[in-house]
Image (cartoon, rainbow, N blue to C red; front, side, top):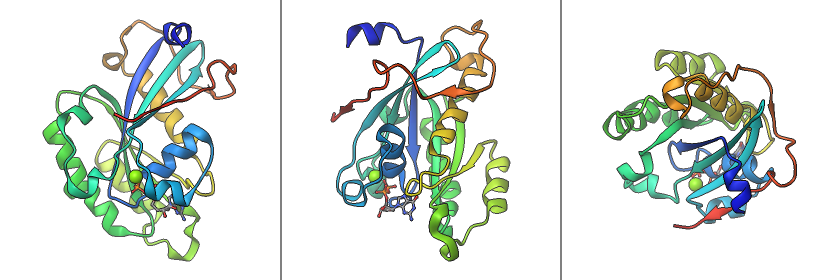
Amino acid sequence: QSSVEGATDYTFKILLLGDSGVGKTCLLTRFAHDSFDDKVASTIGVDFAVKRLFVYDKRIKLTVWDTAGQEKFRTLTSTFYRGAKGIILVYDVSRPDTLRHLEEQWMRELELYGTETDAVRMVVANKVDVGDARRVSWQEGSDFARKHGCLFVETSAKANVAVATAFEELVLKILETPSLTEDAACGVRPGTVRLDMPSSYNMYDYCYC
Ligand code: GDP
Ligand code: MG
């Protein structure tokens, strides 16, 4: 794997935050494996997955950090937050309390632990497949995100709606933020992200730390 490792232009640490049950692990599973599995999602919490993608000619390695249920006990430490370039704050459109908690809990925790970084923040409204069970509108979510200076995307990990798009938008915004890239002079412009990369890059692995 070392040749693949050596060929990476940028490595970005991405965090998934939000209440238990909003779908963080399912979003990660969808993004990393392109699959959805209720049973696995509810029983196994990975610490992070590695996903490689191309943005123009740049080889990007994302380490996406998920919580293994620690969010329930609010025992996330500063190590979890350190060095993050992108932060995804997830709520469930069928549970308004999970959006409220982004403000009351997760944003406040970011102020405590994440102050040294100007990481790009994104609010993700998950479970848009629920139909009549939706309790938070696109407008409410979008207004919330704008108020807090975050990107906003509505997703469904289950129905595979906009999951890759969310990560792609986040990466593009990180690349546009000079302080977040090792090489501020790198002239990457916003545009299409290719996920159909050569097979040697189309790999992921898990790390149970
Ligand atoms: P986490 O605690 O935030 O990691 O949430 P999980 O990924 O474990 O998901 C919690 C529950 O929500 C599981 O029963 C999933 O099957 C379900 N879930 C996750 N994403 C979606 C989605 O997009 N739509 C629907 N309908 N259910 C989802
Ligand atoms: Mg989880």
